[in-house]
Length: 207
Length: 354
Image (tube, rainbow over the protein chains, first blue to last red):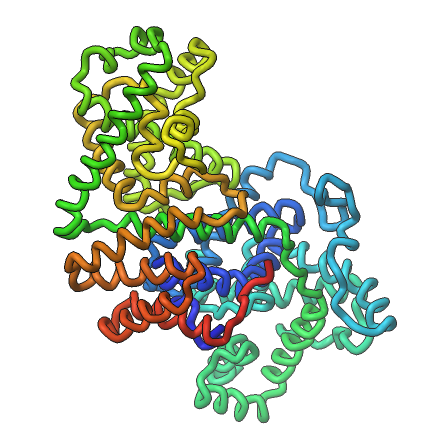
């Protein structure tokens, strides 16, 4: 597989019937998109559905795909709109947190068992298993609009300019939300006592 | 705070995420040397990032991947047939193929009517097509009924799989048009069909191609015009508008009999398109090329032929077709797709584990 093919080239090839090009796109972006959706919604089961819906929309949109914007902008816009719609629909229902069990193949499992911990070494793993819920808690404490910007930039690696297109805001607004997100996380992590070498040392951005 | 400090502070975020050009980055770095305030702000950002980076990436679930790829395969084949412009050679290819298909249709429907007593259907049909409508007019739309029902089944599955085009902004106008043209007949005929099927009892529901298979001896999901038509002798006569839609859809069908079968298939089914369908498609494509398709149409046909041969596992033939495409239309999108295919094949990589 040619690693140099751009997303846009791949999408164009798929729109002309080359299915392996679609597979390459899926391989490249399915993971990051899933993490974006998961971190945006905070709900694993729903994230799986939204992930599938996102890619189905990509397939359906392929025929009329024009590489005007970057593929990732389009992809994350679809995913983000689905998240927003889903959040709207869910707003009256009980919100399920990441700690809740999710249904997988009809069996209830604690989410921790569904999400393998990729870190090597027992000490590191043990540390991470303590750290992880705290980090998730800190992230979920952010307002939605800040959280989606943070996740897109930090975990999906989408540049600010593209994020602006995805969320339909100016680049300045996006950066402003990002600053708030970083500052909010800093405070929340301090409150949660995430310390040690990662501790906040008392100095603040505001000075 | 001095103006420079204010200016740089706004750049810190871009700097932290590596989004500054090298000149701007150097300016920021120079400033950081002399401004503890900005240096501290940067350190605070980096710490938060460092901490949050320990939140592990969650692997995407394997669930749904197979059905996704299967759906992509179906859509890719269908997309090739939905090209907007129809070139000159289609205009005579369609009637010729159409006449051939129609003659098959007439034979089959004759048999169906002959072997199955369908008085209820005839009474229920508003225009009484079996007895009153001119046979040629009646048969062609009948074909479309089946075709559109197949498509509708496919649509239905999509509805359950995903919330299709819930954002209207993403819904292409053409898709919308196609969809509407399919939904309308459903609203008219759906309940009637169910009603009829209930009444008739022993008559299989239209669109399943059961009759066609039995009568025509053609195994597999009904492909081509013939399989579709025979299954539905009870279709109501269409009005003029529907008839136009019918002939459009009919052309699609004639252009690639495989599509009807593929579209009607299960989204979740992992079975590939039938080899003999692809074989037929490849034959048609070769014929069209031999008949002198030129320009972009030729490029498209070459690409489709390459894909069809690929599906048939005739890779070396596909190679030569792709190479011809790349050679003849060096800068076209089609050649780009062909080049991509060649590269993927050269490295022989399986891009996604399945």
